[in-house]
Image (tube, rainbow, N blue to C red; front, side, top):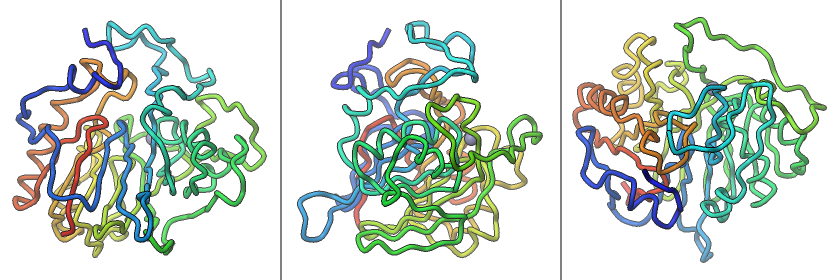
Length: 320
Ligand SMILES: [Zn+2]
């Protein structure tokens, strides 16, 4: 059994051999951009900042608590943490967050389900980062006392220049869960108060982002769907693509996305782990999902480099 402590977990528990799906070790092309996979759809993306010793740090859907709110026993036999149901209130695992995330300048939230938004109030208050998201996301921040100066509400279509980075919010769609029957129109209203129960953290609309940072353009996804006309013509060199099996509900998901984006040079599957078990658990990865998705990418975009991320391991990329 892998007992998780951050100092040892990755070395002790992560596979040491590259999987069939691709590279599992650190990938080093240079040092202009560093990305760390936080699990679920979560990423830390950082780059050197001109005139400063501190990098510029962008977090995307940072969710590190990895609570089991399935209402079912954990998939990890060593996981003795509480089991939550959707009527419960979740609390961020601040010890884990403090150990992993030191600072942030921007936090981008792609929708307001718990595995995307739950740790954002704590992180925003801890780091002072600006939170960018849909109205429901921003109302959740207000409920937890994040100052108005830190909040930017978007609906998708905005393309904002912040100097060190620029960030384009892209209208998108949620994963077609439940055999395409998933649909959620509820929103988190302004005036909502803390603490919010799990079932109050509703989608509130879905976004993707294009982040221009450190000489790269990184496209992010928080779900297994996209609006083709909204991504057509974007030219990210790095695409984080939702890879859980619900993408198979979408007609030609992978080839149409690769074509719309002009065949990005680096493709990294995201949102294809088991985010309800701790980091380091034997069941924390969905190797079979990622492996078959990597095959789809290689078929659709043979020149793309597919990088299989491991939790918290830095991926370093140089200027393209
Ligand atoms: Zn969701």
